[in-house]
Each structure stands twice: as structure tokens, then as C-alpha cells.
Amino acid sequence: MDGTTKTIPLHPGQAAIYNSPARFKVVAAGRRFGKTHLAAACLSIAASEESNSRGHLITPEFPAYYVAPTFEQAKRVVWPKLRQMLGYKSQGGLIVSENTNDGWIELNKGRRIYIRGTDNPDSLRGISPCFIVMDEYADMNPSVWTTIIEPSLMDVEAGALFIGTPKGKNHFYQMFMGALKQGPGWEDWEAFHFSSTDNPFLKEKELKRMMNADNRPIEVIKQELSASFISGGSKILKPEWFPVVDSANPNLGNIYITVDLAGFAPQEGKKKLLTSDESVICVTMVEQDHWTVLRMLHGHWDIKDTCARIAWTVRKYAGCRLGIEQGALLNACSFYLDEYMRSYDRFVTPEPLKHGNQRKADRITWALQGRAEKGKICLVSDKRLGNDEKWNDWFLNQISDFPDALAHDDGVDALA
View 1 (cartoon, rainbow, N blue to C red):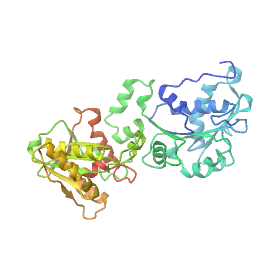
View 2: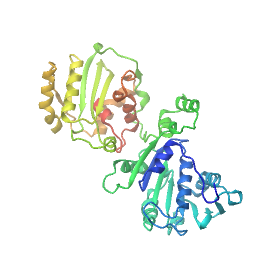
View 3: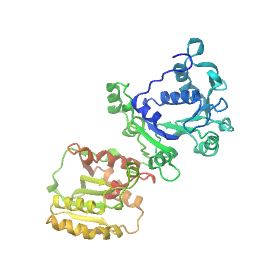
View 4: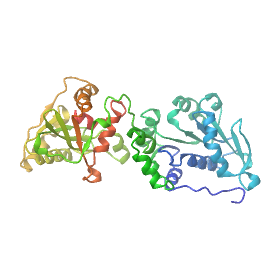
């Protein structure tokens, strides 16, 4: 440190976000990942630069802004971190002056970092940021970004960092998914997802204690620590209603293989795969009125791969019945499915599944809610399967989200 510069350390996850060339970065992260440290680092660097990545000259009339849901929260969260990170000029640091009441810190050369809250949106009108951080964006009114802040970035093509812990599938989730898909209008965006465990400075025993606490609901663990966008909205279905058992004997009941087809068009890139529906092959053993879900295969497959997986599953379970939702997708795969079954020397005629024009949410609720609540549906553990074949958590996450319209329900629908 020489009075004009200062080294700011970042752990690998924080560095990956900072080094991204994207103009707009959306970060969903678990508690204690280091979001505040990252925000303070980005603000400090942006406020010190002579020009930004888009070649615009950054003069003192273009300050950096940190925005939280409330002004008091903004001061409480980031002010101590900025003071610690930058230090005061009298002590060899970079802070020349500050005003706590008005919410600003001034660095050398007249550069400033302003602190604001969306509880007073008028305080954000007329600003011209060189960079802005929107912290805990899930707790903000999204119109503050779209109508006030976003237009203010045009002067110097300023960048923005959205960070926070998910709060269900609200506007933060929609922004995260838009940045992840990078479709039309999202070319300058990038999404990042980190759990609390991605902070290498947190002690492993503390993380295990938090993750395994018996008095902490699974929804809280997944949302606050794993940064999962679970909604847990109406609680029509609850994960605890679907116990996981170590094993089951498939010879004790009748086997039903039910298939939910999601289309066969090839998907390009991981980002698109994460946001599109999956095809699901669900294997369920029925003993009188009790269901044991033996396995679920799910993924994005082309038509031949899909039919091969269905035929392989049919071959594995002798005496099974096969049901596939009626419609164009069933018709499209009939030829290949017939060929693969003949090659396996195991032929089962698919039965077209009909839903009587019921809405998906209604038929799922009718099929699963009563049974599950009475303990009549269980899942066989996937712990012996490879990582690419695991399905328990994937399915239970969908149970938590149902019937959120923005959530996936492929596995739930296949079981129903």
C-alpha cells in the first residue's frame, strides 16, 4: 500500500465473479459466502479506476453506489467493511472524508462511494453511477431497478452486481435465470451460484453443524446455506412426507414405469440445460395402496437416447406396465421404442396416459397429496448410484417447490 493503491484479497469464488467480463452479474450465494466483502471490493475498485471496461473516462461525477433494501441496513452492512478495507488517509489508507448521515465515503482524487436504501427510492433519482451493487435484491421492489437505476447507467455504460440469498422464486430468481440462459436481451449478463461451503475460510465443523441441525427445517438449510431457489410456497406437498428407505424388493408388488416426455430437440450449452424441462422415467412398485419409488431417470436426451433408456428400464423390470403421456411425443418415439425393445428381446406395449383435461397442478395434488400425507409413498435411496444417476434431492426439491409456476415439476408429474 502506497497511499493510492491497496491490495484486496479475494477467495476463489469471489475472484471468479470479479474477473468475469460480464457487465451485469447476478450472484445467488449462501450465508457467510463473503458477499459483503465482494461488494466492498468491487465498489472500492470501481471508485478508484480512471476508466471502465467499456472505455469510458470515469471522473468524480460518476461515483459508485451500494444499495440495500433500507438505508440503515446499508450502513450497518457495508460501512464497517469499507472502512476496514480502505482505511483512513491519516493512517495510510484511502478514505479522505466521510458523512454518515448522508451516506458517502470520499477517496483520494474526489472519488466517492454512496450508500443508499430502496426504502427511499427518491434518493436514487438523478444519479450517474460508474458501478452499482444491489445487495439482497430479493428483498427489493424490482421497479426500483427497472424504472430508476437501470436508466441511470447509460452515461458510462456502468456495470451492476446483484447479490443475495434466494427468497423463493421471485424477481431475483427470474433475473438469475435470465442471466443464466443469456437469451435475447441478456447477452451482457452472467449468473453465479455459490453455497456457504464455497467459502474456504469457514470451518468445516461449523458448516456440518449448521447443515445437520435437527431443529433446522430442510427448506431453511437449502435456502440460507445452499442458496437454493426453493419456494416452499403453499405446502401442498412436503418433503418430509416422502421418506427415503435404504432398499426395496421389486418382487413384492406390481411395477409401473411412467414416462414424462419433455421433447427431443438437442440443447446447446449447460445454461440452457439447467433451465429447460427434463424427460423423466419413473419406476414405482405398488403394494396394495402403498407406493415405493424405486428409481427416477431424468435428463435432456435426444429421441433415440430417450427410447433406449425406456427400453432398458422395461427390460430390467419383468412383468412391468409402461405408461407414456399420450400425444405427439409418444407418437414420435413409437418407432424407435419398438426397435430398441425388439433388440432387447423384451417388448411391452406402451399405454397412453390420459388426464381427462385436468390441470397439471390438480391431477398431481389428487394423485399424491393424500397418499403422501398418510405415509403411503416412500423413495428408495440413491446413495449407491453414481452422481449422474442420483435423483432423491432433485425430486424432493421439486416437491418443495410445487405448485410454483416458475419451478420444474417433471419428476412430480411423472410419479403422479
